Amino acid sequence: MPSTQQPPSPWQDILSLGRSIRLALSPPEVRAKRAYEIFPPSTWTALNEHSTYLNFGYWRSESDTIDDACQALAEKLADAAGFQEGDRILDAGFGYGDQDFMWLERHNPEMIVGLNVTPTHVKIAQTKAREHGLEDRLIFKEGSATAMSFESGSFDRVVALESALHFLPRDEFFRQAHHILRPGGVIATADIVPLTDYARKDLFSTTIPPGNWYDGDEYLTRLRAAGFINTQLTSIRTHVYEPWCRWAEQKLDSPDFQQRATWGYRRWLRRELADDDLMRKRYANMDYVIVTAEKPT
Ligand SMILES: C[S@@+](CC[C@H](N)C(=O)[O-])C[C@H]1O[C@@H](n2cnc3c(N)ncnc32)[C@H](O)[C@@H]1O
Image 1 (tube, rainbow, N blue to C red):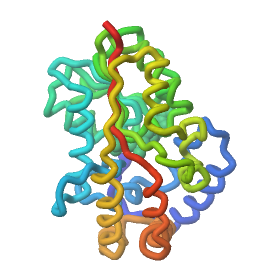
Image 2: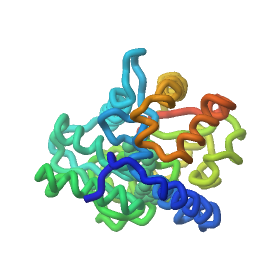
Image 3: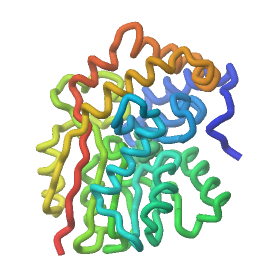
Image 4: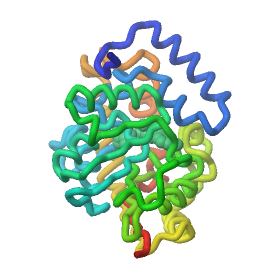
């Protein structure tokens, strides 16, 4: 059974190096998937204490852990989307699916269908759903948010929690989401957009297609072009990047992080955060937004 907790073996570093080279040489359509397969799950989730979320989180207080923050971000998205009992929800880019288990318990939708391009993510989420006897209501599928084959009107809400930045291109997702939503249905995303042109050539350019690199105003314009109305965008960046950086910095030397993250990842994160402070410089140029829009009735 795949696990997110098994510590990585030293061979993982060699594998990760090979996978990074392969990623750099990959065509754009497989980059997001390959990026998430570079490191083993234990490394991707090494900053977390209990959960397996893969997002920056929404930090409300100094005492929040990353698990609290990730959960709060997922709830913020659910509130923005207006989840209601009995909803049919599509979650595009579900990671390991933590938010879907929480949403099912807290909001009691009829079902949540998850779509994800990364096979490891799909396997882990499917296994968890089976173990909890929830596979009829949490349906995790391998597939892309830009190649969806659901019938028109199949869903009440379509959400993407820190994943739409990867979709190639994001506005194709907007068009398909519009098709599969019922009239009056809502699309909601928690997403990363630039404040300036700055970040295009760094780390993010590998997994964020250049065509997705536009600001919040353009984001709303593209949603309207896909047929949505009542478009709204709220910046939450002050609750996201800086507290995440502080959390990660104080985790760098913890025994738990040392044990779960590969050597290469630890080295990369230390340089990004502690040595050169590259991440803060980068995030100074980025917004973090919650966006909602409705399909007209
Ligand atoms: C930053 S992670 C967020 C995961 C999860 N929503 C969370 O918050 O923990 C981005 C996710 O998007 C998925 N993804 C990337 N491109 C995708 C695509 N075209 N269609 C569906 N999922 C995609 C990745 O595999 C990954 O699981």
